[in-house]
Amino acid sequence: MSDLINFYTDNAGLLVDKTLEHVVISAIGLVLALVIALPAGVLLGHRHTGSFIAISVSNVLRALPSLALIAISLAFIGLSRANITIALVALAVPPILTNAYTAVDNVDPDAVESARGMGMSEGQVLRVIELPLSWPLIFAGIRTASVYVIATAPLAALAGGGGLGDIIVNQATYGLAGVIAATIVAVALAFAVDGLLGLVQRRVTPRGLVVPKELSTIVPPVEHEVVA
Amino acid sequence: MTAAVTLFAQEGPVIPDFGRGDECIRENGKFCLNWFLDEFVDRFWPRVVEHIELTVIAVAVGFVIAFAAALVAYRWSRFELPFANVSALFYTIPSIALFQILVPITGIGWFTVEIALVSYTLLILFRNTLTGLREVPAEAKEAAEGMGLTRRQSLLQIELPLAAPAIVAGIRVATVTTISLATVGAFITPLGLGAPIFSAIQTGANTEFVAASLLAIALALIADAAIVFVQRALTPWSRARSPAT
View (cartoon, each protein chain N blue to C red):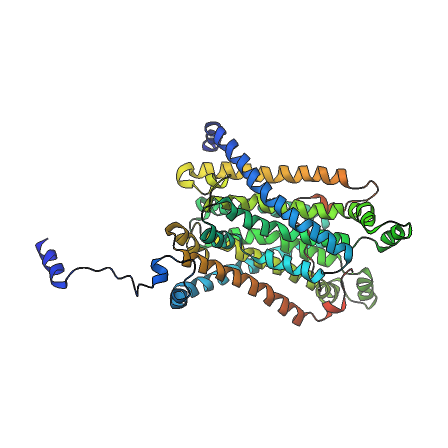
């Protein structure tokens, strides 16, 4: 225990540097996944087509072991931050894609029909009706993805380096106290990001829309058997 | 000393045996198919078997624990939050850290890897089982009661079969997650397909870690497809109940 406290006091600068790197690595992976998965999921959900594609892509990506992806890209790219980024994007796309698709696809058809009846264009229907009603579920997917990404980013240390993984994977140098200290920071980071996203989620959720309790916790959304 | 020298002299110069000297391997190609095929049975297959063992044991043990906990939480809902929160905490702990942190407690070896793997399966299995049970239509439960089924009969004959698709969906996600995390477990002890990945990343032997990675990916995809196949065969009623469209 005193080892742990000593590590924090002796290596405060190192921990801050590695934590910032960790945030950057995680953010790159998460943002890329958002750019890929969010428009795709929302658009397919809006058109109520392509559920097979959305679900299959998610299922395949979810099955890919992160370490295997990192090792393969290491062979082809060499030591680089791209290795971990590929693995993190593969990890973050499934929850974002599935949730975005499911959320928009499941928006109350009556609401959508009324909007069309009022003369709204497709773009307006999406912007004014479907997206606001979908935000809670979409955000639940983003929060799950962020927890996965922050917890997996330490693998970066195996192929290119950077982030808290540099401490966690290097027990020989930093000792078990260092491993535990960096792990605690990583866990705290996951909770902090989840909490922040939770605040944003509450902000963007329309008043009057009740957020189910299960969406406001850190745990990932329940997986449903989806018959494609 | 002299004896040893004479012995060497008699046997001629010592030429290290590098096997057949496959050109691809000498050049450290990205993926040498011939070498992989030659080495598959001795070098890779035992790792595949270990990996399957690690995964099956972890999912089976995790399922027993999570299923029991879900039944308790289904009956008495105040038990839900504590269990969900504890198992959610594991999700935020990087696996490569958890394996190392467990070593001083449970030692280096198979047992430590399994403990970590089991703890990562709990959340998904618990939540899917509980949600599956809660989403059983009230009409079905009322009909069961009306037919005079006891609570236990209703659970076994009506509620669990209707919850089966959600439960199996949880097993499916838990299985592919475990296959992924088991590769990381080799960081502390050479077990499963992670072992050649870690050792070859150190030595830089491309073919070895690319091959082991491809095998891990293949294993995950095959397991995923196999579970879907088994589920469709075992629960034909699940297709009749179409999901929300």
